[in-house]
Image (cartoon, rainbow, N blue to C red; front, side, top):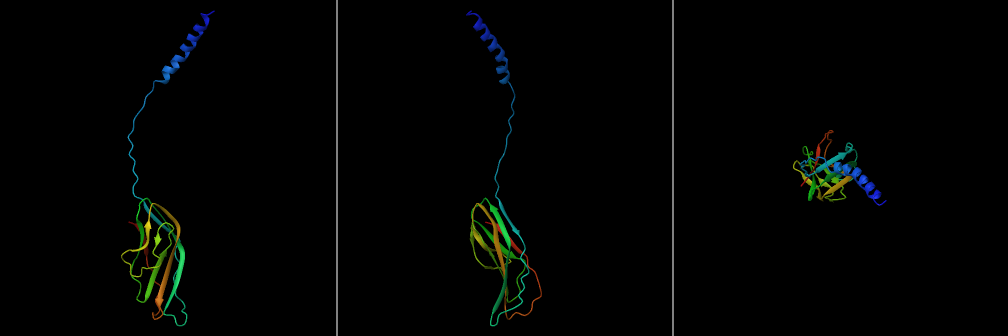
Length: 164
């Protein structure tokens, strides 16, 4: 009776042996993969400001203005020491000003910035680091001296740039 159990054990081991040998055979391939994170600097605006018409002035005022804050911007960057600069397509008429203010939760807003003659970019937000600033308010203010005569409707293109 002692001879029977070892025979059964040998038969069981012999049945599993081909499975073990089969599992150890196979093939593989090797691939080379290059990875990189490039600088990311994205800025987008949503909404357009309404027309900025000055239609009235209080008695005794030297300057009158009108503002609009319906525009928003969002930005994302993976770089440090970034800023947002603004420029204008062509200068404002004499006696008028166009100003812009960008709110920021991750940088430092420079407050209300006069871009009336900013053909070269001027800083409006500084100190931006890695991350994003989402749905931040943009306020445009148009001001005119009360001594300025009537000016026909005209438009300007304001360019906002996220840069270092």
